[in-house]
Image (cartoon, rainbow, N blue to C red):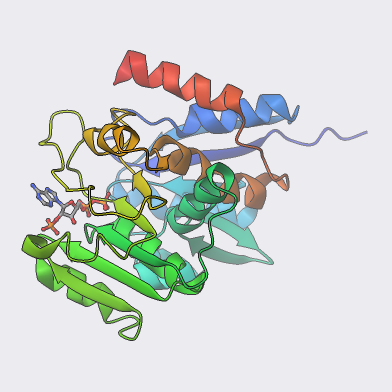
Length: 282
Ligand code: ATR
C-alpha cells in the first residue's frame, strides 16, 4: 500500500507577526483525525509563484492569504469567485480541476456567526447599519445584499469609500456621512462596527444606542478586547449582541472544507482555545 502524503495548508503573508489561523485549523485537523498540517508561510513576493504552483500541482491543498497579499495574489490566480471580485480581495485559495481560485470568506464568516448565535434573526428585508467602509465592510455589505436585506446603510469617516461600496448596489446600499452615523440607528435591525475604533490601543467607538429598536442586534467585529465598549453598552440596554471572535472562527470554515473536504464545526472548545490565546497574546 502506498501511503498518502500528509495534506498541507498554510497562511501566506509577509512580516506576519502573529496569526491565529494555525491554532484554528490545527484544532480541526486533530479533532477530525486528519493526516494534515497547517503552518505559516511568510514569503517575499518573488516566492509567490512557487507557492501557488504547489497548490496547482497538489502538494499544497491551499492557503489563506493575509497582509500584504490579499490584493497582490489576484493576478497570479486563474479565477476569483464572485465574493472575491466584489470585495477586490482574496483570503482563501484552492484548486479545483486545475483552476487556481481565490475567494473571500469574511462575509460568509459573518453570516455563519450571526446565524449560529441568533438563529431566529431574519436577514430577508432587514435593515443593516454598517460603521466603516474598509475590506471587512465590503464583504459584509456584499453578503447582506445577497441575503436579501432591504436596506444597507454605510457610515464612514471617509465618505467617498462609503459611496464606492454603495455603487455596487445603489438601490439597496446608502452611504452616510460619519457625522450622521446614527441617522439610521432607529430603523436598523442589525448594527455592525467594522472600524478599528474600540480595538485595544484605539479610541472607543462612541455611538448612541438608546434610540435603537429593543431587538436590534449590536455587533462588533473587533475581538481584542472581546467585550468592546459598544457591546458593553448594548448589554446594559438589554440589546442582543454579537462579538467579533465568532467571525474570526467562522471565516476559517470554508477554507478547511475546500482543502480537506470536511465541514468543520465552530465548537465552544475551539472558542475557549482562542479566547485563552487572546488573553496571552492580546
Ligand atoms: P478592514 O480591512 O479590517 O476593514 P481597514 O480597511 O483599515 O480595515 O478599515 C478600517 C475602517 O476603520 C475604515 O472604515 C476607517 O475609516 P476611513 O475609511 O475613513 O479610514 C475606519 N476608522 C479607522 N479609524 C477611525 C477613526 N478614528 N474614526 C472613524 N473611523 C475610523
